[in-house]
Amino acid sequence: MQKQKDAVEGYRSIAASSLKRSGVLTRGYSCDWQWTNRNGERVAAISLHCIDPSNVQFSYNCDGKPYDYTVQIEWLPCHMGGERAMFLCPVCNKRCAKLLASSVFACRACVGVNYASQQRAKRDAANDQAWKLRRKLACDFGALDAPAHYIPKPKWMRWPTYHKIVSRIEEYDQRSLEGMVQQLKMMGIHL
Ligand SMILES: [Zn+2]
Image (cartoon, rainbow, N blue to C red; front, side, top):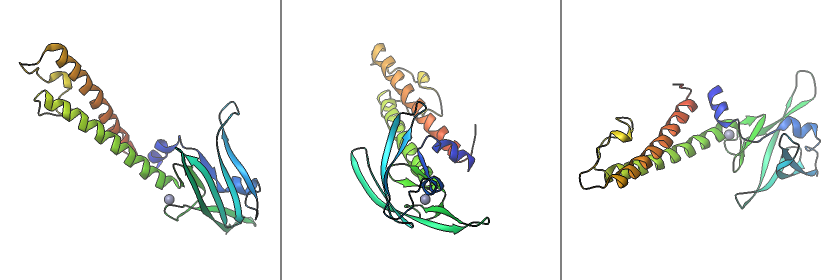
């Protein structure tokens, strides 16, 4: 689980306890919830509206698309008295203390899965490109068999063209391998 946390630690998050502390979980309360950088400058903000203490509306734009949905809050009694606020993840509906900002706010596990599939898509695309170029060089071995500069130059190909293709293959291989390493990390495997 620790490894998954590493991969998603760059995400902005919002804690149910901070909403409670800031008085956001009060019926009818509306505010802009913002994130600042180290210099205290605002880098992102969303609008929150508390419909009632168990339902908070999240509104914001992400990549030019408007999002507007209700996140449920669960109140749990504390040992010390009082109640603790927890989110129900809008994606998996599990209880969580924190939501991470992806296109939608979700628990760490849901954002992690999303992150992994994005990484996989990037890696697959890079791998496809590398293979396309390998075929141009009539090569039938992949990045895991031998580095790109081991691919022999086809007799009919000019050297500059060959070098250009090889260096592009190297770039794609690099990207694809990085994606693979990233994914192994997500699975808790360190090389
Ligand atoms: Zn979830």
